[in-house]
Each structure stands twice: as C-alpha cells, then as structure tokens.
Length: 269
Figure: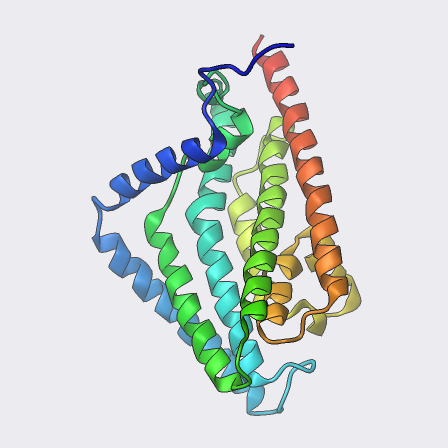
C-alpha cells in the first residue's frame, strides 16, 4: 500500500493560500470596493422596486408574503455574491485554460487538480453582495417578527452550504464541457440570465420551469430552500431532496471532470 505523497497539498491549506493571495491582489484596487457597493445597492433597489409593484396589486405571491420575499431577495443576493467571488471566476478560468492549452500548469501541481482549479481565483470585492444581502435578510426577518431561533439559523446555514455545493457542481460540469465543446464563452451570460429567476421562489413558476430550476440548474437548493429554512417554511422532504440531489451532483461532476481530463491528456499527447 502506497503512503501519502508528502508533497501533496491539503485542500483546506490550498484554499487558504489562494484566498490570502487573492485578498492581497484585490486590496491593491480599493476603488473596486466602492464600485461594487454601488452596483450591489442598485441591484437591491431594482429588486425592491419590483417587489413594490407586485405587492401594490396583491397581498401575497404564491403564498409568500412581502417580508418573506424580501428574505428570498437577501438570500439571492448572498448566493450571487458567493458565486461571483469564488465559483464563477474559477470555472471561467478553467474554460479559458482548456481552450488555450494552459491547464497543464494546474495538472502538474502536487495537489488534486479539481481542488486547485476551484480555489485559485478569489474576487474579494464581490463579497460586498454577501454583506448587502445579509443586511436585507436581517431587515426581512425583523419585518416577519416571529423571531428566528437557533435551529432555524443552523438549518439555514446548512442548507445554504448544500445549495452552494450544488451550484458549484453545476458550474464544474459546465466548465468541463469545454473539453468537448469549443464555444463556451457565453456560459457566464447564460448562467446570469437563468440565475435572475432565482430572485423569486421556484414554486411560483410553472411546473416545467420549477423542475428545471430545481434539478437542471439547482437554484431551488441554493436560494428557495435556504429561504424556507430561515422563514419557517422548511420541510424535511425539501431537506432530503436537496441533500440527495447534491450528493448525486458531487459524484456526477467529479466523474464528468475526470472524463474531461482524460480527453484533455489524450489531445495533448
């Protein structure tokens, strides 16, 4: 039995190293923080305007009250900030490296290639969305007024983590498709367009779209289910489906990535 490679870097240590490097690079351009803050506030203002228009005609939307939908908007903003700060830049870089033949630099490092390509690029100022989203979420919970217990907070954090993993797996499969497909430049625009649908609970959409936003693009697990957790609407069925689907996505994305790497190695040999 072979021992562990002493030169192989642990995933957590690797992530922290790249996070530190990313932070040092980003703080050189502090003006980007203010630009991102303005963009975040404009996005929130647009969402609040849309909510005001909707609730000027009705008292609830698909069973969701105005404060509850404000909570969904907060979670939506938090998740968007996490995606744009870590997941999206790394997956776009994978697409570019595969197209330009630079992925070898990651494959030859003494670390798991998937871990390496998933943590090497961090956009610090995109986390501004996370802060703004948390403020919106707190205001929404104050308006709901029922009080949020520690169980709801724990459930929210756990489900949010599951949802982010599901989104990561989805992005990894999209990025891995670049091993077979040439034109993957529009992936960001495509995802951004679909992601806007997550601003509202998926249950308000028609059946075909609801299932598409749950199992094809797992926005339900990233936004709607965490919102249900923090607003007291969560069911064990939703938790079970979210957990099981994420496990499947983890296995499927890993398989997809490894198949792509074999194709990449064959093409470069």
